[in-house]
Length: 200
Image 1 (tube, helix red, strand yellow):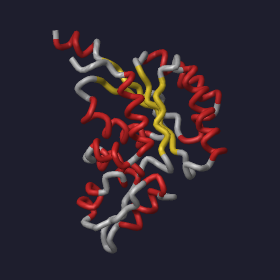
Image 2 (cartoon, one colour):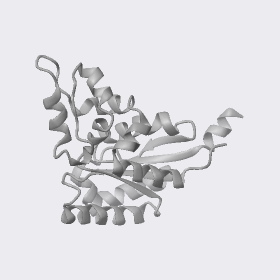
Image 3 (cartoon, rainbow, N blue to C red):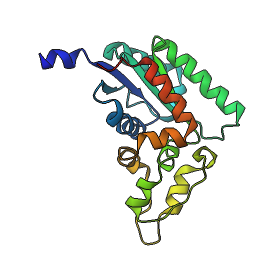
């Protein structure tokens, strides 16, 4: 009976620029929604700018059709300020095209500037891990290079922050704190909730 219930659980696909990004999204969403959904990674071998290539988008579509998730969280980094209209248009066009291949079941997590902004949104976890007192702006979206910001915040003599630690740190943040401090994530989370099945 338990196996049958698991098979019917809501399946969320994860598509991102790297395995690190999809692992980070799962680490962040898992504690919040893991009791209601299962996760599967779509096309982990396709990374970075390959996502923009029609040939690779065809492969993504085939992998989506094979895995048949109920929803796909598509995550990209804007790699630019929120005010960069040209870059935002390019990222929106990417999502529009990829979402057609996902049967319009995609929810977009567009990180400004990068996914590390979500670590900065609850800096307490980073400060505890690296034994530092890192102060951040009220709006983490204003930090031009979140990765460099975290690396530079690491105390002298300590191992510097590395992108490979992102999933571990995001797995420990307080979800409500991230929602409160990061506007783009709050908007994404609302869109995600609109797709998820109601609590039993």
